[in-house]
Amino acid sequence: MAERIIPLVNAFNPGLAVPTGPASGRHTPPSGVLLDALGRPLRDLRISVTDRCNFRCSYCMPRETFDRHHAFLPHADLLSFEEITRLARLFVAHGVRKLRLTGGEPLLRKNVETLIEQLAQLRTPEGLPLDLTLTTNASLLQRKARSLKAAGLSRITISLDALDDAVFRRMNDADFPVAEVLAGIDAAEAVGLGPIKINTVVKRGTNEHQILPLVRHFRGRPLALRFIEYMDVGCSNGWQMDEVLPSAEARQLIEAELPLLALPASAAGETAERWGHAGPDGRHDPALGEVGFISSVTQAFCRDCNRARLSTEGKVYLCLFANQGYDLRALLRTGASDADLAHAIAAIWQPRRERYSELRASLPAAARAPEAGKRIEMSYIGG
Image (cartoon, rainbow, N blue to C red; front, side):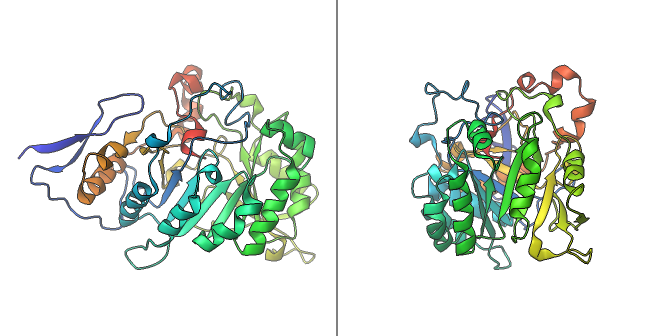
């Protein structure tokens, strides 16, 4: 019997088709475990709720590309909260246990608390709540922390690339003061949006001198400060390998002043290598907080990657460095059943072989250049 085919439009290759099951319309229901071609389970779904951001960080949305003439997506193109929740429920049926809202800047999406309320009601097949988190630049966090917690958000991750105000304003290129981000962190901590993670993208020649001040500032608080190697995401950030500060160098810089102790991964597929501060007795003191290192360039972790990304307009991306997206919005808006959608998700994930970061060093220079594959921008699918 011939298979029924529903086309899933690829962002750069229109016409890509994914089989969605037999002509009878009967599908095998999700089992709670969905493996890709390399045996990696689907566990983490990152959901971009807007392509807009009020910052213009050079490594993500450089102003020369995202200027006042840049055309952002019209509201009608965005997935509605109900569409997002429906897809999230089906991803959870396939094994997703963590949902992360991202952007752009997700707090710019009007009434995002309503979406959080809807997602907070979802349960795993075992009846357990999900790990529901959000990544933000914290520009609006001080005023929104309480409502986010009340809506059901579990915890929060905050981007902070410098403690020095002048450096921070230069990097966000929006003249936004670091004091307001720090106030947002305090507000999140006060309402219990934790454990809080703070992400710092380190770009050599720009902010590596901020590593120690950041560590000193947050040492003694129960949060994780994570340093991320500057990555070749998208086509617009002008990435160069000599601007990458390897995590090993960042850790050595810290350990020259403050001893660190290696910690085990907190979960399968953990992106950060975890280190704890040592107390006066030389043992790990959890009260002092953690330092983490995300080393996508120098120590790729593709073999454990369990993340899918859902873009603002409903395309599924299988890698942060992807140049292909599968359009689930088209299925949502043309009457596909839950069974159709669940089967399409499986058909997208099961052939997955993406492992760009592991292969980067072996690729010819021309193939490594971001513009070579017209990679999707990080601001479009989140970090």
